[in-house]
Image (cartoon, rainbow, N blue to C red; front, side, top):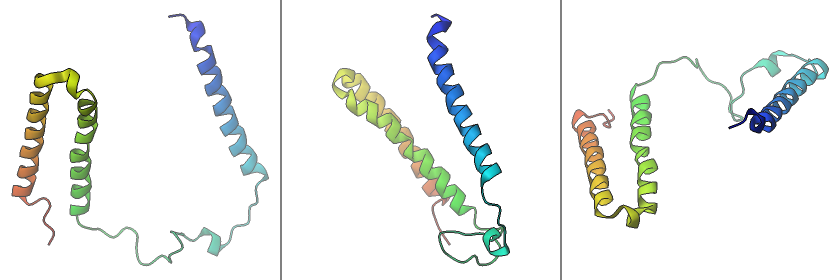
Length: 119
């Protein structure tokens, strides 16, 4: 493959990067600079801030999120299999059964360990 084919891609990246740099520089230089205590205060969806944002909370939130992502990834593998179901035939069907069996074993393991129980 010739490097000439990459010239439009490099040119587009340079134009996009130049536009972003120019826009950010111009807004920083020419933009308003009125700072006040009220403007510098944290703002979250129109709700007043309450308490310390650095309060520790249960690891269960993180664990639930990680497990959701882990078991949600199965959809990425199920979709191409479903699209090519007829072409894969019986062998593809058995492979998917093995894949789902592994997922089910993992799910049973986390249920047995109590990872989804909330106190």
